[in-house]
Structures are given as structure tokens and as C-alpha cells.
Amino acid sequence: MAIAVALLAGVAAAPAPSLLFDLRPERIVDMSYPFDDKTIYWPTARSFQLTHDFSGMTEAGYFYASNSFCASEHGGTHLDAPSHFSESGLTADRIPPRALIAPAVVIDVRRSCAADPDHAATVEEVKTFEAARGPIPSGAVAILFTGWGARWPDKNRYLGDDTPGDASHLHFPGFSPEAAAYLANERHVAGLGIDTASIDPGVSKDFKAHQIAGATNVYNLENLAAVDRLPPKGAMLIALPMKIAGGTGGPARVLAILP
Image: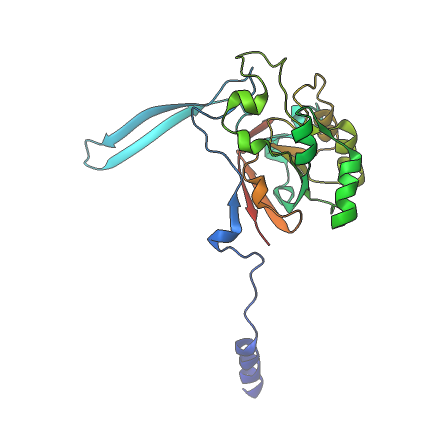
């Protein structure tokens, strides 16, 4: 009996476990743009279309509403699965959930991008970040902060050209192949992220950064919003794409929890 009381007393006296994250509303950053008729898609992709199927009172006397939507996998804030550019890469539904919850690292290259809208972030820029902030941890999502989010949703300013069906005159920054390879092969990141329409610069014709990411089963998060609200290190990212069986990507709700 005394032992039981002592055990119960020990349980009662134990400190309450602390939360892993501070989930107060002001610590949560929504990094996804809404999907609507202003959502920016790749010029050759099908844009977001919402059909209102029904909204109103039913014959049974209760309110009911339902919509249908249709869109490309790759538009708005979305995830590229490795299979987007790798025949053997993971499809959207096969990315391990643990890889979608990861530390966020934000590499600020706004100055370079302001000087050159076709800037491809270099390994040197990544290493300069690491010299100041420490090594990028394995399993992180490395986000390139170009400043292009300030141009959303102006398609012409954001993409560099808004000609429907023509992707040959785009201008926006991205990762260089060398930087993508360094992050994937040397730092073993889970994902690459960016506040533009693609991890490759708009002028790219061979999408080398995509190819490198796909070959190493690194996913991409594109058209990220509110990157300016994240610190260089310390935030935790939660990226939840639509789980499309066999999908090469999909719309994503991306959240960051600030330190």
C-alpha cells in the first residue's frame, strides 16, 4: 500500500511535459497562397478552376454546399515530388510523412536577385550562409528567399512574362545546379523551397536543379508565401501536399512554426 501511494505521489509530482512546439497563433505562419482565379500557374499548365455544384437549402430543410475543382498538380503553392523529374523518384503519395516535417533554413539572396532577375544561387552563397549560421542540418528544407513573393499575384512581374501557353520568356531567380547538388548530396536536405514559380531560374531550359533533386529523392516546395516572416534558422516546417496516388506533385498547405 505504501509503495502504491509513493508511486502515485511520484506521478502526481512529475512535471507536466512541455509542448514540442509553441502553437500560439502568432507563432504559426501560413506559407500557402489561396487557390482562386488569381493563382499563378506555369504558362503551359491548366489553371485552377472552381465549379459551384450546389449551395442552398435542400428539400429536407438543411443548408448544403459543395464545389468541384480542376487544376494542374504544379501551380500555386505546391510540392514537386521527386518523380516530377525522375522516372525512379518517389511519387507524392510515397514521400515519408516524417520528411514533410522538417527544420526550415532560409537563405537570403534578395540582393543578388534584385541585381539580376535570372540569378541562380551559388554554392558560395550557401556556404556564406553556413559560415554565419552554421551547417544546414540533414533533413532540413533549404528555402531560397529571393524576394519574389512581393510580386504575387502580378503574373507578369512574378514570371517575367504572362503570355498564355508560352514558357520561353520567363525571368525569375532559382537554384544553380551546383547549389542544388551541394544541398542534396552534401547536406542531405529533405526538400528545397523557393518563393518563385520554380527551383530552377525562369531562363532554364533543362531544369537541372529539378533533375538533381529528383534523382536524390529531394522534394521541392514552390511559390512559397511569407518567407520574409521566417528567421534564417529555428523555424519548423510542415508541408502537407494533396496525397495523389502516383502524383508528380500537388497543391500544398505549408505551415511554419516560429521558434
